[in-house]
Length: 119
Length: 476
Image (tube, rainbow over all chains, first blue to last red; front, side, top):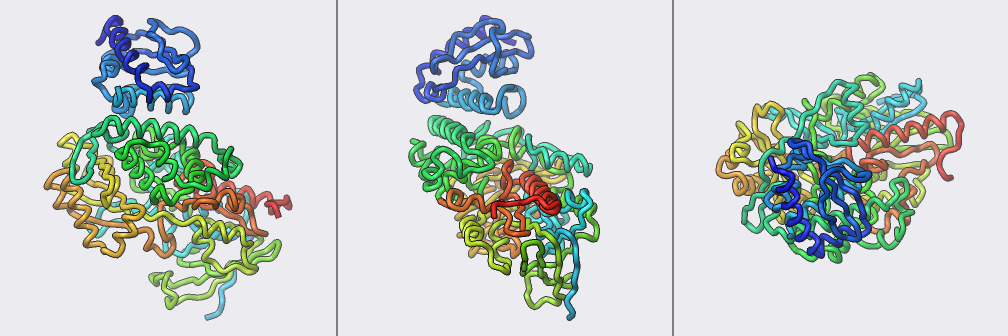
């Protein structure tokens, strides 16, 4: 189980690497979205925004109307942000779930894989 | 021998999923219908069979995935259960004799190449969603898209050679052809119809998510059982003679046990007279019937430009799924290999181990001449490289070479050559007099899949129902 502080710290690392990756920022073109994260084990909500091809800081709590809702364990989110876990593996096993329109889900799935592989 | 004559309101040629779905829909609407199929079985490209060693296998279509609602509803109605494809563990990437393990959607031995491939798949899928499913030829830039191949799109959108290899594997597994044979417009349409390449390539959450307990052909058999003696097997259709409001399908009714593909087989001529006909076959097979009057040029030209993919489906049976004990999920991605992709195809109870592999596209064509023994050696060598020496000693290897099937001539699906859709696309579903077209190739959702075969059959049956009520159909 990961604390809110650990998760926010891991996310900050991931965000810095992702925002510096041209392949990834190109994939964010024209895709301004609100993404809610919910941890299954610690029941904590988080909010991330995509704006102008950049990922925002992670806000604690759910803010605004989400386009995509991501659910998973705090541990898996932390491992993913640290770059130790291929999110595709957890998505395919159903341990991380994505809810939203088909195209938004497809986009976040691809973005998270590229962030893992390419940063 | 004297010609047998039958009369009905609607004759359906082809007792695959599409023809049976059409006939059932008509029969449930109190229409007098007859279905002819060349083979002594129903199911078409769905063919559940018992191997010489006693294993039940699906020689053709076998998967069901999310959003395949027609297929799911039919399975539920018939009480055919499904179970998940085994995906737990790591996949194996074989490339130039090297072996790497991976988790997730695609091999990651070259992470930057994999990222390139994923970014390109997203681009491709987003482009696919711009193509209208009912009329791909109306897509923005349709002519430009249809004048190039999927390969040329890869050339301009991929920087990594390893990503290109991986995407080529996915394309071959999906279409049974290389990307160089596919119109880009057709490929985009097809991907849209199935929810995107990512979705088509996936097991869990995608097109290969679940299988039917006892095999997929049960669904065809279930539909045929409802139709009873309105399904006539062992009756290859050869001629279609039609006026504006009537049609006679001429077939050879071969003796039970005789080979329907053998022109010398004992048979009686059968003529089925009807008000309407539904031809529920791939475009290639439709074009092999003799029509009087001849089909309009555009319809025949379209059929000439929609060749079948080429696939040999190989089943390899073992005492148990031993690869699972090594943490492997049975999936191999092998760019340049004979089998470009494999899956764990063991039954739900894992009572035995089974790998299913696909020899597709040019590998399928090239290895046809080599023969089954040579193919078996090549397959087992790759399986040994992937899963270790135990893979060398299967109980049984059974292959299904679809291009060699007289009443299919390829698989899994017919594909659009460059130019076909923009010049001739509307002829895919446009009725010709009393003739209507079904088959999975005419579907707008899940084209090429079992689900698309069902929806295409129902769409054709609805067309016929309207026509029987005197409503105008088609564009002529």
